[in-house]
Image 1 (cartoon, helix red, strand yellow):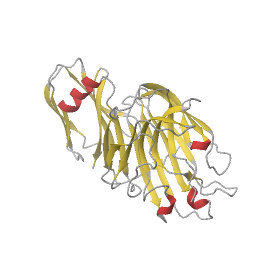
Image 2: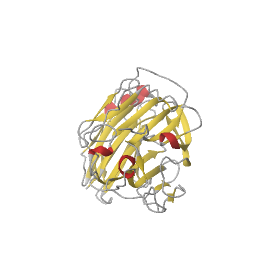
Image 3: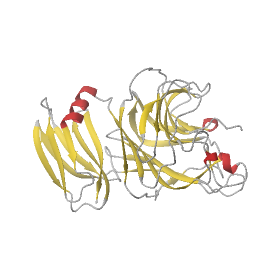
Image 4: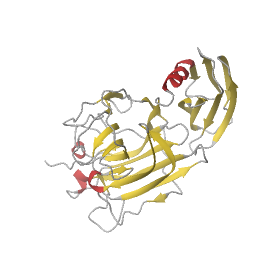
Length: 334
């Protein structure tokens, strides 16, 4: 059977090849138990039912990733992904690495909108893009559209955090997947969109509720994949560690945030081996709004208790920052 070589990939242009390096992100997963479709968002004009559309989508702010800055996604139809420019060698984000298409493909009515928006105010904005009710080419091309997925990709302006968020889905048959019984999900640091040569890449494997992220060999014959599609409310988060790496590692080791989930009191415990310049703690909601701020000065040892009882239930990002060094963690408020 012939499978088109296409991924639902966000592709960020860069012309470098850095082989053999570790993933410059810390991986975390959590299930928040719910999924909120985007509202008051811009619907991408795909000129009817889409399959491999060519599009340009503004992010709304600059974000650093893999040592490069970008502010726009470009969709190059034949690879089903977003590029930063016409460069052929690129880094990629793969929130759902399968051959997706509009469930209305072959008709005049689109059933699978692609939407995007920016929530929050600078410097705490969040770019969000969603694939709603997306179908699978391997099924739609043969006259069926039983299977579908809903998912979003979020990029945080301040933290540089990347999140893949998953909603309702129905997989009628594993035949919709190009390889295995689930999607290929991960990050690719170097890929050539013409020759399909793949450099550094990292993919999730195992159970979708308890995945492991591992490096993939260069130019793999097949891409690693999960055992099944992620359930509703599943979030895969990638926290950058390549900004002031030494200092950020110090924060990662010396700052503990608990409990998670939290009901009333959140604790930030500091045990730093070096004196920070100006330590700050912030909490952001999923709209990018700052709901808490506390300056911790040059504290190296401290136990900060944050009253979150009045915060609405849901998920939040806790950020501890010292100049350019930072750590971020998603928490669930119950």
